[in-house]
Length: 398
Image (tube, rainbow, N blue to C red):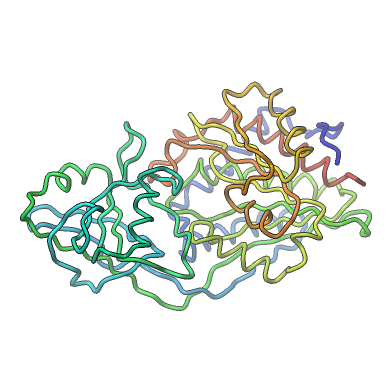
């Protein structure tokens, strides 16, 4: 594997690169809802397809069926105050009438539990919530978002068990709703509605193949998610930017090996889109030369950069190059650990990968929008780093 940054150079000036990145981010940000199977998600797919076609390539718009859950009446009220929110999309549901009863904490069974959660499934509050969901001893749960202190709002959790919903109905509400929910009197009853309307629907992945000079070489796969809860510009935008720029470059500079680009929906719904792609290409996980995962959040302000890789060589060489960028903080963990994001699907299948993602104070938050959430200087550096990594890997004979 060749990991040096190589002699291939993007022929654009820095100012031109910034303009291209800004143009793509503004287009992404103009689509305000990227949730799987929504009009916004479909618009994203056709925009990416049009960019592929502009490169003289053929875009494959791959539609697949799934059961779409659309929120209906989703609120909690004590008759005086009412908070609307979003359901846990892999939890139970109620009718529009809802469930009325006494409230309490997660430690008291048979009451409507009121608790807090973080925007990541790995934090302690969210772990406690998920444990309670598994035990299924509450008729419903109201979960108040406990997000970045200075930015209250409704940052929601991914539906990691979307195909197999479990536990009671859970209503996620914004941080500020905790002010009255946490002060409810002991004898007050509340009504919770968590209505999820199911129907058969479609979602869309987008793919393109750039054919290499030597067809005997195994292909490189470059993947990024293209869906999320809200606008999620710093969460998803970085991956989309590098994916597009690498595709544009290689379409004009033929690599040695085939490079398959795939942008998949269903990220927030347990990776539905990537699972569909892998089902159609069952041998690709192991047969690919490597996978490049352009994951979440590395374009965010005040966020760390996380580097993941499938073996020590990938890990060390990537970190070596990242350190030259002089970013504030770069983290990683052992290559033997199961990675975050879509890289976990490749890890589980025994494939090779490199993976770039990060942390984000606006993770899954409605205020993750252009331009305030984007660290443009960091994104430009990481765009250059990953572009050169992809170019080197696509031209490697090892």
